[in-house]
Image (cartoon, rainbow over all chains, first blue to last red; front, side, top):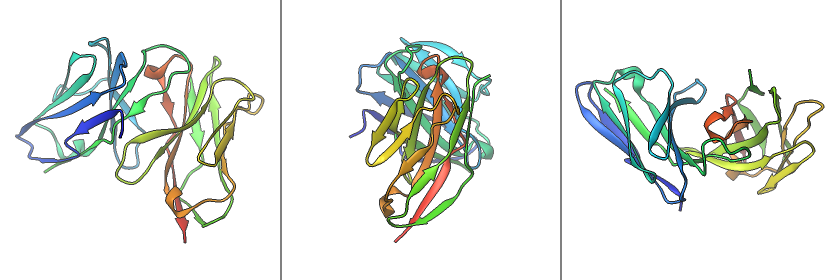
Length: 115
Length: 112
């Protein structure tokens, strides 16, 4: 069982839909992340949260809206997406934000298809 | 800035073959180095890590040694199995998990 759980595993949505991705970590970590993994492109860090505060937003379009209600849960709200937003969205967590030698723990991802 | 370069894939080997996936890095500080593995349809899992020069990380028969003199962290396994088919990512961080830099990934396919 992974310590980071993402739901749903697969999602198909139209360009006018609104949907949300959910991530929950059971590791007692203080930092959480959203990554985007597209075919033939490097992993892209989208958002970083530390103790429920957003500390990084890497030029992500406003049609992606993150929410971190507590240190265990992270959401990614989606609206009016484009077909090029189809990708695997990965959630990750780490013990702290800036502790050296600390790795990130990943969820299994949500495979998003925008039609 | 920091960067990671890993060998282009895909790599195709027969079962029980010896595996090497090359990884070199550029860093201004003293980074920690990681290998992550992504099995089909899954997220990334930490395979092994090394936090200082000459450290050897190992797990599931895989090994990698932190070579500061050659700025390398090559992944090796003596005898691969079909179940090792996956995408392997080399990564580094010198400022914590929020600043992990990933390589582009190397797809490995093992033939029975």
